[in-house]
View 1 (cartoon, rainbow, N blue to C red):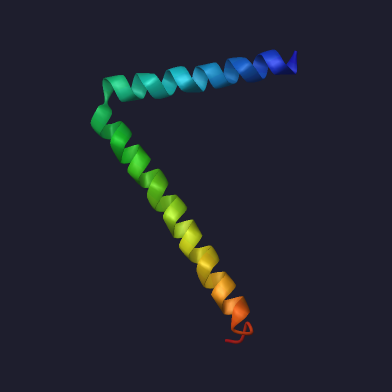
View 2: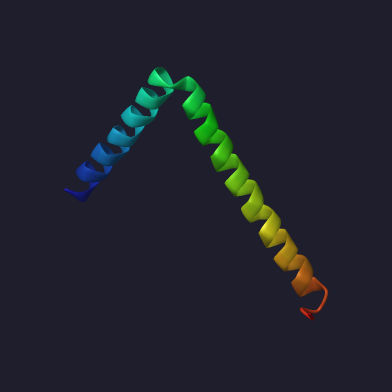
Length: 59
């Protein structure tokens, strides 16, 4: 039964995404840009942290 509810949830999310793309393409593009900026910022932060660790972790 959990599988069916999981499939239904994925279906609802996909339908919502298509609805947003069709009704507001500019807004959908803004959402995608915000998402990619967030991913980019997170990757930069992880890179900075790993560099800090590689340099001995000193302040």
